[in-house]
Length: 227
Image (cartoon, rainbow, N blue to C red):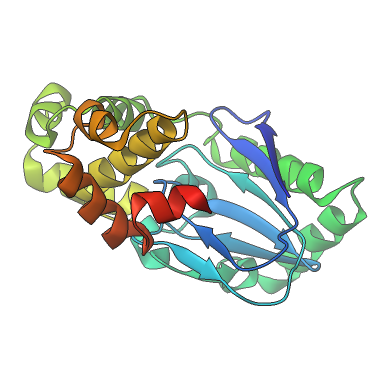
């Protein structure tokens, strides 16, 4: 069972999940700080669905606003692309042991993770999304062309690509594609027909929507929505 709520950290979400079987985590432009079985991990940005097929395990996480986690974690997003890594691989082991003990001693792991993220954000100054990155995410999520957004930000295409690799783990065109996927799925889940979803989400047609969903998630739109 999956549940989430807004975090006390700007733009972030706190979530818990106790799966009953195999799962499929879809690309969303975000990175997560995770807890499972007493261990802290980091989920990097995904370019395709991450399939979980092990035994059911309780999870808790903090999902950061797109582009904000690298400053908080101290590692460029592209180094963690399509990966799940122990936090001890990124931070000193003694520090991670102390932080893990705090999370495990909290009233619940999700609250412990949220407290950890808040303290880290205060220490690093990464307590709110960078205005430039927020503008980029908002504009791309609205379907604006990458070139136009780069011009609005006063960045060359090359510089925007470098900034995006560090913040999101991939270039702005891939980010736009991932955000369009999430936009389309949100519409389709309301019962909107797929043809209308494709048109409103910014796809050329329904076939384009189906092709993109299959490439990013491994399933057709109907197969994905059926799950």
